[in-house]
Image 1 (tube, rainbow, N blue to C red):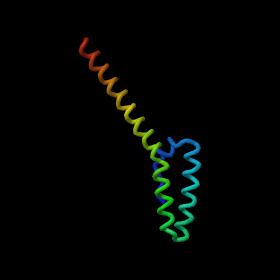
Image 2 (tube, one colour):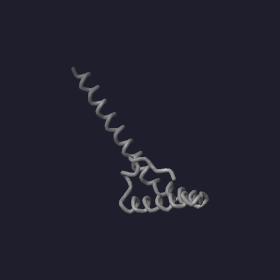
Image 3 (tube, rainbow, N blue to C red):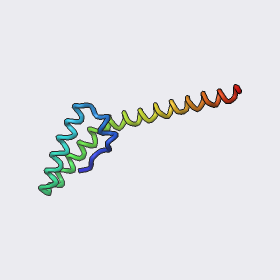
Image 4 (cartoon, rainbow, N blue to C red):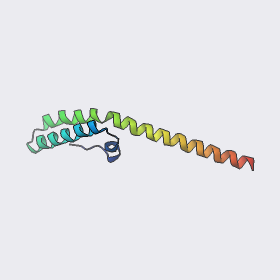
Length: 82
């Protein structure tokens, strides 16, 4: 089973995180039993489950980029006024 990144896991809601952990446990068990076809299905569920957290991470990145652009613009304006 492939884990998602720590950043994505940090943005999961409590409910999503509980479901994620349960799915990972089931998937790991299936892999230990060499039931890879079932583990693949569980992995697909995990991939779908983490999509909202990935979008939240992307939005945080866009917000940070906007704030950086605004900061740089304010510095540029201050330098022009001098």
